[in-house]
Length: 146
Image (cartoon, rainbow, N blue to C red; front, top):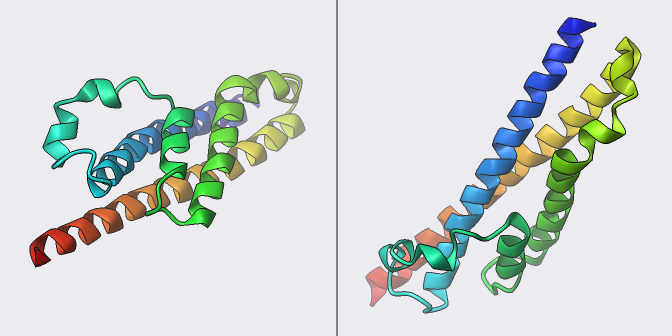
C-alpha cells in the first residue's frame, strides 16, 4: 500500500507542476494577446510592466484571455474546465479522497482520478503553448509585412 500511496503523492506533484506551468503559459498568451490588441508595442514593454500581470490568478488570466478575439471559442471553454479541475486538485482532491487513501482499492480510485487530471492539464499546457506560439507567429508575420 505504501508504494501506491507514494505513487499517488508523486503524481500529485506532477499534476501541480503542470498546473503551475499552465499559469506561466497563460501569462505568455496574455502578453502576446495584449501586443495584438495594441496595448503594448512589444513583449519587452509588457515584461517591464510586471504589475500588469504578475499577481494575476489562473482565473483572472483565463477571464482576460476569454475576452480575446484571437483565441478560439472552444479553447476558451476548455480553459474553464481546466480552471475548475485545477481548483479541485489544489483545494479538494485530498479532502475528497481521504477515506480512499486508507485502502489499496481506494488509492487506486484516487490514482485514476489524479491520472485523468494530469492528462487534462498536459493537454491544456500544450494547447496554451501552441496558441501563444501561433499568435506570436501571426504577429511576427503581420509586423514583417508592414
